[in-house]
Length: 323
Length: 291
Image (cartoon, rainbow over all chains, first blue to last red; front, side, top):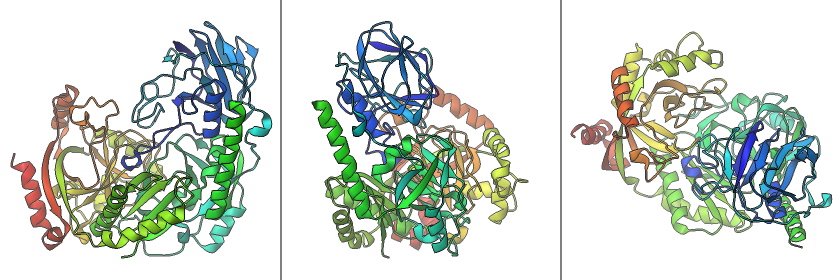
């Protein structure tokens, strides 16, 4: 019926595939930052792809099960241990009442997805069980997990021994190439600044969470001179506060780009130079601080092709698991 | 006025009505988003009006981005010719200006501010030509504000003061955003006031706090039991400056769940407003004062 949290890890929260439809009042869609890993973890334990699971960031939790279940870990390489014995990732395995699941040190990626057969059964709020931490909404009491929490789970036995082969998982190259459609306020920076933005290699800053990822180490952007429009504010990076797309790349004061992710702030007054394409959002979820990344310009057509490729890769994986 | 459309990656269309802020631009954006909502276009997942722009999110597996763009462009002419009138409501919100909490936060992040030697209020009063902080607060709470956008975080309203452009209060955002802002802070950036619905990061100048919750995910606050966010674009807000004693007393009432803000239904016409700004505002304020 439940999973007890012995230790919570660094930042572990309940997520599913999110709650679109409330961005106009500032409530972001949320959900697992790595949607591919979220779906596959659920399918490995026999859940619907959008069932609620745990997203663990950089460090795993320690959990104790109060009943038999099937578990699978996907996403970043966070090695699971059951009662101290190693278990594989991307493969479902059985747990018994009283068993303890813990994790070794992260070997790759940034976020692991822990699916439990039956799903984590917290209340549905605005159509989703996802935790919106900033707004204290959904999930387990609207927050990341703490020691002593007891998470209710649904009743389902699942099937162990199911795994997703390496060739069906997403590869992650370093430096990561984040494809981006230049636009929105791209015209605010000079041609030279735009060219340099894509040539330089950036480094993920420590400020990297569900809201967004900050990047450092590049040359500050030069802006095209103008008289600031009424209401925008005096810094050349200021705009009259507008909506921020998911994946949008804002550059406050022209210095450090921030890519907004699934718990995005929905709007604000900093100019954006473009938007990371939907196919590369999962990639960002698996970037650790201090890793290198580049932004690569693409056209809308290329973005749609990349999206179709991503959809096809997901379909192949899902087909494989459906057997 | 011609809307500047732009694709935000493969899932968003961003429409900028104008670079600068005006109520006419806001109304055009609102008319556009209302038209998109009414059209019930397949594949559209989010419809977000903003101050002088708007954003539509869509699923490109269900609708081609170019097809959606073409459809939006057909709505543009009607939106810019709508009569810009609104059935709305005026809400009175108590605000404790110069409170100890925003003051403490303001001192903690001084090195991120344009003028580390003054407070946010002193700085804003000075650059807007007010002799004292008290005069500045009187201007701030003397005329109503229009909710021209809700967002940033859950339920946070952006407010545009209903005065002529030369009287609009303007202030830059912090040089670098703060990592902390007390919840229910009244802030200001560009020409906009904002009320921070939750504690968190922020870049606006900080002037005071309201005791009244404006977002309640638990939906237990009596006036937030149907909708967890108090504000919608198009609402009109009047700040009422209060002192520490009133703040504490109101907070006590709120904690007992006995308090609710004064809210009155009203009509707003941009044409009438532009003809007589202060006369229109006086009539609106009578609705809450004549209780």
